[in-house]
Image 1 (cartoon, rainbow, N blue to C red):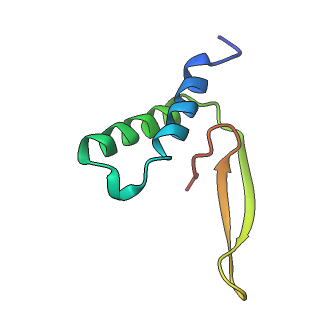
Image 2: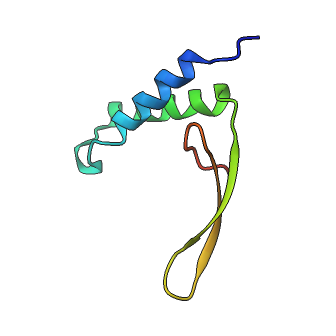
Image 3: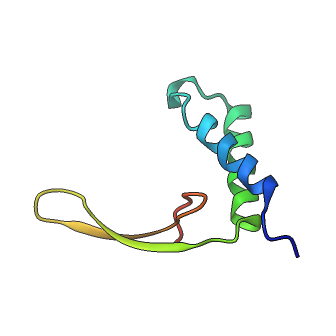
Length: 75
């Protein structure tokens, strides 16, 4: 088993680039590619889950879980 997943590292960088395009400029093909990269990371990243609490407004907050490596939100 390989200790470093070069492919996952590349996909993390690709996701960062894909997220930089404003939503109003993303067409259906673009969104499909985004979803495919997201699915790839979900399957192949060796997730390191972080649980955090974020403020959603002055009086409310929400607990979130996400991968420290690929930043995907874990439900």
